[in-house]
Length: 297
Image 1 (cartoon, helix red, strand yellow):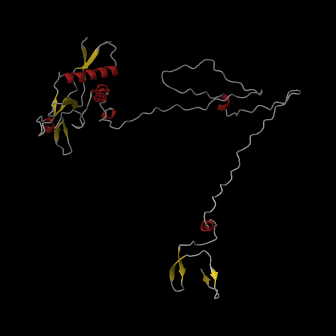
Image 2 (tube, rainbow, N blue to C red):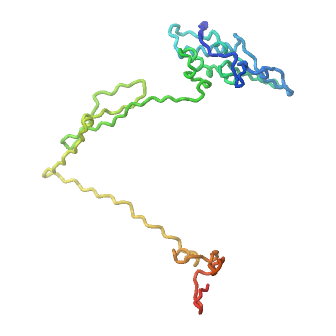
Image 3 (cartoon, helix red, strand yellow):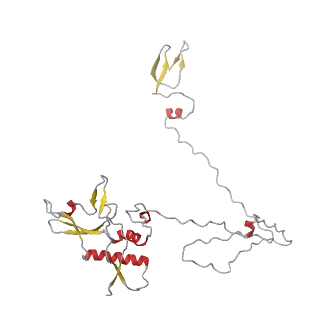
């Protein structure tokens, strides 16, 4: 197998120490408790250990990052060669988290520390770190706003290209004959590697504001058969209101008569007793007059 060609990253923004909110400096690596490898009372172990240069996992990270970087920037001067980072950027350090239990099962995950925002901004994989590495290798202004990694630009920013101005479709000007001429393109349009929408060109009459005129009605030729009249289609049938279901009882029939009665049997109503108001229960819908001409239910 051909040897790997080294790639050197000449710039780094890695920080070995960062300032926290209390204006104190803290190391940009896992905490002391996270570096403690002592098992707990149940025999479980969960700690971080640093991967030195040359460790198998550290070399794997540098190989993957070198391959992605040369794939993005190109390496025509050495076709068919493989590339590897000569070293991780300065002050970026790779740690491995080891988790095991008393039964003997163990899992490991690698994390890259060194981002200037502190130990909580750690990269989980080479693909996670690659956008930041690409920014370090290509941005001459060293402006963190130009970096697209998840820590420098946590929100996904979608860039939309301004669409070309859409022109109205072309209409063929009608001539004096009753038949319309169809425009036939002389040759098919050339295809581009970029997706685009083919839009017909604007006609000269539309550019000058001239409206296309309707062709004059052709006169019938003597002896020619007259067109057969086409029967007009009947419109939709007229809508009729749906009839209500018949009343099931006398009271329901009386309720359906609008504005005939004010109250229904069983309702409570206020009535004027002269110097005070009282409550009553409606027993009947109709009233009768007694000999003193008083209303009686």
